[in-house]
Length: 192
Image (cartoon, rainbow, N blue to C red; front, side, top):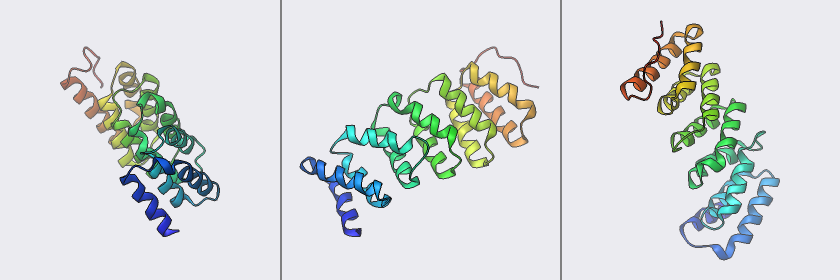
């Protein structure tokens, strides 16, 4: 099986469109048989061959409940090959529903590459920031909020500020300070 996996990875370096059907069958079969490393290799092999199949597979792999952490992370690493608006809702739903730190970190990486985020997505990220216990994830979520802050996010941060931990208070103040310096938000009341 190791050789098959290695050969599938090698197909990413050349045009293997004539092998699309076989690689798709390998992907589907290995996913059903829970041979996730083989399915991951087949998914990567398909990226240069059939983007429609890859897109559908990515959406399937990141739609909760997650069948395979391996395939979910592989799919998240391929998200930037597709239009953000087509996959945003699925990614945000996964962010809301998962507690797995590896998956969350990969979702955050995807969001950092997003050109723009819908207001509902920003509020979901804010909600995850509020309830997240892992300080590394909290810091990274704060970075996203800092990049995509708007009045709705600011209002949520201000409501949460009095009851938040000292670490989260520091992150909230950094977000607001950065936003004010970059003129993203003007004439907002002070937090006391």
